[in-house]
Image: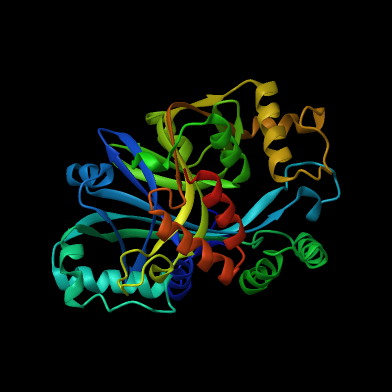
Length: 198
Length: 198
């Protein structure tokens, strides 16, 4: 990875993971990859997801617990002419923040831990509440019928691509264009550009 | 996959692939999965992406060309109380449309084909134009320095989850809540729900 883009500050990585609703889980069986998007929640350094007890990913995981999990938050598309006047397509890009985790998946069996994870998932995706806490007896059957999986990371790599590698001139040119265009993602893209340019 | 959610109409699948800016490529080496998000373009049945000639994914692909590629378009989060009055968390979900492709990756060597792919990528992500066509002589060096990869699908599975499996009563309850909430993704979620409920 271009060292300009690498993010190692755990607070930035956690904030990104907590702001994104879903990631893509990649598994491998007999050297054939399989990928599936899913909602997830981070607790400390681990990623947790849930699902049916018996489905393709659970069967594959039972045979090979090595996983790759990646998350992206996409920002503005940057047309080629935002950073260059030579009319070439090459500078066209998209700014983004991503996290790529390699690790081992572990099925959670403990009832209380399952409830804790699902409570955290609900607090992430339904912060307005409106449901009985997952520790309630009412969930006994549902918890038994639900698989909860923890991904314990061995490596975590985070990439923020917001023009950190560009000359001041090209960087300012993009900022000016984004300010003028003012589409939905442009404001937050400008904020990220300003935060990470050295 | 729940048969309610499976989409086989190629026009719907193509429209989804063409509306999404990036997907996640999953590779495997010695049964260890690796995943990376990337911008892509569809041409006919194939998926194409580009990148540096020498990087981790190109090295892994050279050793194992089997890939999984997945794309998601996320729609509204559906709080548990949108479809149930029993105050349980279980019905909470997120509606989405996804495509999962298994196939073989093939590095494109032909200059004209590389130019055609990159032109299609530009037309997808920079439809406003403002650059010399990729067939121009000016790109000779850049094309040589860029890897272009085709994913030839062996299987393509598409899942639209928009409450097709719900009773009429619960389905209508969600529609009513989405209409009342009226957040950015709610209108397009309602449209998809109405299009795919039988």
